[in-house]
Length: 129
Image (cartoon, rainbow, N blue to C red; front, side, top):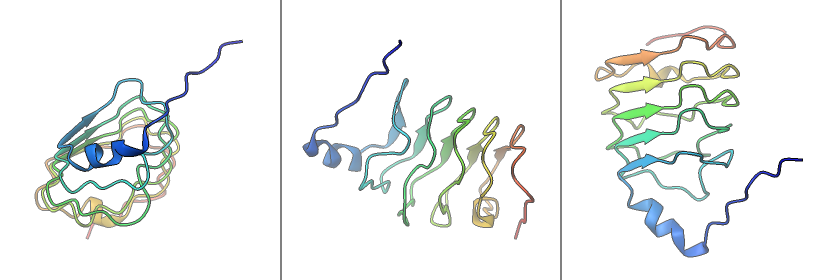
């Protein structure tokens, strides 16, 4: 049998996460980002090809967020509310096979230049405001 590694995050790591501007973690093993998670300083989230099911729960202050790459996150089912991401330029969700819910606020940004949804076959419809 192949045993998957376990990541134990120390309790005092959360202040470090709160100050991140760029998040890329090759081999990120968890199904969600550590809770409680604050994304106020993040400019870019890059977690493609991971087992992420949900990024975070609840509302986030996303005032600096410009790019999200979750392509090929085949277990991702719901994209969190991105209404606060007023600077969002890139949203890469290609190959998110189980993605079935994305709020319209993710697509209604004047700043959005890149939107990749190929392979997102479970999305019932897209309503752009």
